[in-house]
Image (tube, rainbow, N blue to C red; front, side, top):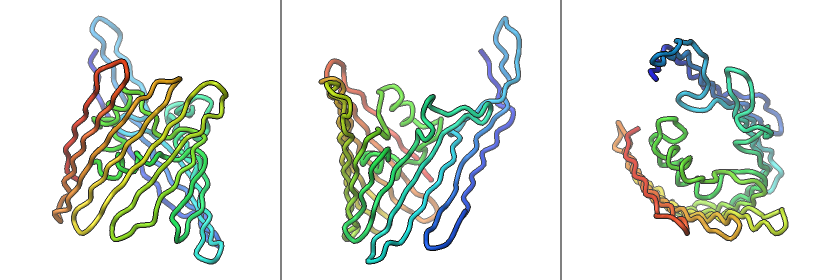
Length: 248
């Protein structure tokens, strides 16, 4: 099968939708491509595809000052196919994110379907995060990684001298299924250097899948060098390693 990418349009939109006592932002990304498929011995065909480089999505995020340094925050985000308008995940209107939280001098709490604490390390220090060409995306797809499980409670600390940490836990709301995701991360950012570490355990019916991530980035001025290491351990299979080096 030979495929030719004839055109690609990636559109990022970030705009303010409302500004009063509260602030709301609508944002999104559209990734559409015109593809020509020329199978050997078959009939060539033109198609419109979605998510060739990065998945199309739109979302709403906002916050409202409650006084006393407290803020009420929320974020909902839906992935979709631009070629036919269907949701990225059938039956889920906001499959990418859907959470509400409160922040202040104590840090921030979120409940709903946020990214896990482990994702802080995976996404923040990654030259190709969320790209279809990313080693990490292929790594996660092959290992069954759960990026933003439902029924999650998450806490992020304030930043102290460049250090920050987060923890998240997804509740098992179905009796006798033994399903949960526990995730922790820690990071440091000071001057040109950023480093992070994350660990996530996914309990699936008594089987624990364990994910470990180490990452580092250094800002040289004209460019930022990034390096990642990931490890996955399954009880009944050999461990899987991931390595990624890139420059932004």
